[in-house]
Image 1 (cartoon, chains in turn red, purple):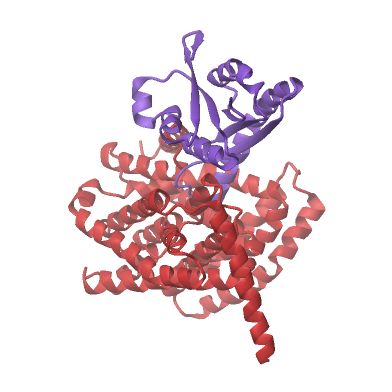
Image 2 (cartoon, rainbow over the protein chains, first blue to last red; image 1 turned 180 degrees about the vertical axis):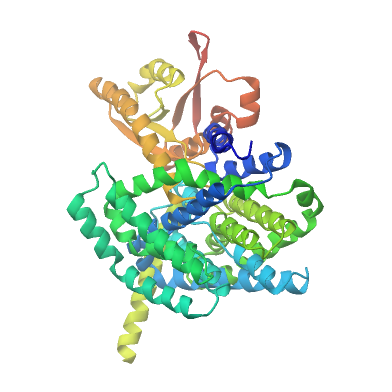
Length: 399
Length: 146
């Protein structure tokens, strides 16, 4: 059976199809449902193994997903409240990363690299979860909403950077990877714009999609040769072409359709497949402690900075809780650790469980107890701009 | 009488019935607001996923709500159209508060007891949490009952 490619593909696509229907019915993200379907398949349907081609499709899924995450950022939003979003975003990554790493190594007794994977997986935030919450509550267009989204992006950038750098082998290939990536990233916006200008976005042969995939595959290949992680260049490529994608939605639509139909289902179902329910049950205490640790380190890192950035306690708590969400990069980091035999299945189960809970628990608390009003969030933007102008005036007087 | 009325309208049988049953109320109102609520996925994995859901909802509800609004405008009413995203009940309550509505009108479609228990009913949420009066028009079989 496992040698019959068509039947194996049919089973996996059947799982993906079921996940799509469930997600539409329940109004929950298809990715989350695919992970849960993977958990069911792994624990109850006897699907315990993946094949080389499933692993390849799953790998493409994580790469394209990361590319889209980078490309979804609006550069203008990123620049508009840079001071607040940069400081909150950086600490929102650093404190949970260091805190969870230290806890996993010193208290749980995990090895150095295992503890680092834990730190990376639980330092993440989720731009998409936060974006959905903002849209639902009508806050996405407020200044504070844009600042929080930009801070989430910076946190995720820290996560991707850590994943790409910490486990890399520092040799000549890493140097080649860095130099080639830097050159290609520099020219990517120009190349992409030029290609779209010449062939448009309506050619049946889809040259612009193939060009983006070509760059992702090539830089991913160099990263892998340097023992780094392919998600790092994927995120960076997404980031540098984000401006092009903001203007040209057609290319984004096509990348998204390809990713969601063919690549990401394999990635998310695979991510769920290796979660062991007996291990999950036996590790409930550790999972709860790690979730609390993620939340508390986010509080220590983000809340004081949010207050210092002129937010009132309610809005600061809301911001902190949204920054404590996480999903995409948490699962990517955990699966990277498992695929490279850095962590074992027990550790993977614990980390993925905490990651999924961190998508749900902080969001529910934020919406239930700390939901700010749109007027307050708009007012924060005016207050923040006035403070920035005052700082500039003082600086010019002192200068 | 009610001056600012919010009608939750998604083009469904229940919504059409609510529109028909409440037309008399609209004649004394100074403003009628039509609201369609598109669902977006909770705990989304990518921003694209949310954007795509928004675009689909806009395509799905846009034509229906504009058609209903045009019918009311043709009758000489002042009509505003809103397309929002999120959980239906929460969004209706939020928009009603934002525009200062003094009546919310909504239709409900028949649900099984299990679906009501598992997913909850938007009408229940609106009745429980709205700051103003709520008129629920219920579809039962082929007839509507108020």
